[in-house]
Length: 444
Image 1: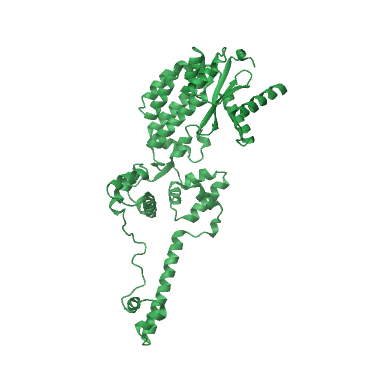
Image 2: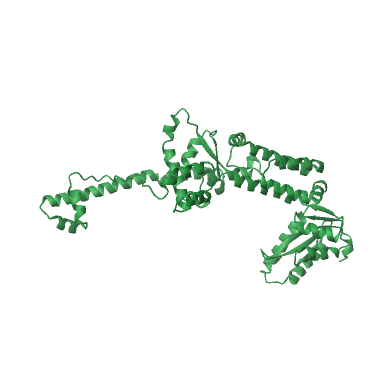
């Protein structure tokens, strides 16, 4: 082909061997045709490759500085365009990292939903029948398994198991536990009665023990008039390794600290248990608190609470409220009222969308200064990246070009690689890709 005729292109990298080696593809923005591929994304080699196309005027790319440097060195003063999708993606990733670092997985807010207490009870894993019924109800309302899992604060696998069960055939775990306890007491009472009946007939203790397969000591306890089949340990808490640290664990968890971090703190103070024990303890505490919900409601200073998944708030970064089924409008408004910083971040995202698609790059500097005032490290890193590549970002706002063609071409290359089962050299891959482009253009 005539390399001097190529004027406007977009470039992107693609995996030759994922996480090990990458190549670079070039697509003509005017003909929408893959022009060339090279088996590297090294700055010097990309620079030499681009130099072979002397009349390039515009290059669209993602935010990678290795391509920015190669383009500047091969064609000084060229118009570089930073892809809008990657600019937005960088911002959403920065805010997502900040929210994960700052907020717990479940964010507490004052209860605003009419069914807040019912949802709170569903978080109790002992209420299995109600949880299964709730999962079936929400599935019938076209909720996804992931969305149901968020509402129940369960794993996706647990919800999938719930959906395979019949709610009418499930007994409440608390009731089942009580039934087992009563049955055990009945069996024990039968044994005591049998031992006493044999003793009344004059059978020696040793013979009774042999007949009933118990020790002599056990038979002596059965024969004592003060013996009771009631288990004094039933439903009683047995203090374990965590006992000295329980109050601190509850306090740290209520502040949103993750279990591994709590484990690290109390381990330094002498705790010898596992992280899993912390999770189990908090779950039991939650169940114990929920069991006393009615008593708490009678207190004058009691304020009902509910929890919103952090994941739902992260989804709102790039989705509309109507598209996120795990949070209602009322809950969303309460979150914004309780955590004003989230309100400001959502407003900043909306303003950035307006700047990006208004073609008015003069508003960018003001927006960057506003973002810097948040003093959030993740956003500061993002702003620094934008400032380094400021001209290309402004061109991305002003000009119509983007990297969509390159992204589509990378998918096309992946398909060809899959058809070849990965058993190909780069030269063969390049020949197949370019030959495919040639025939596509011939038939068009």
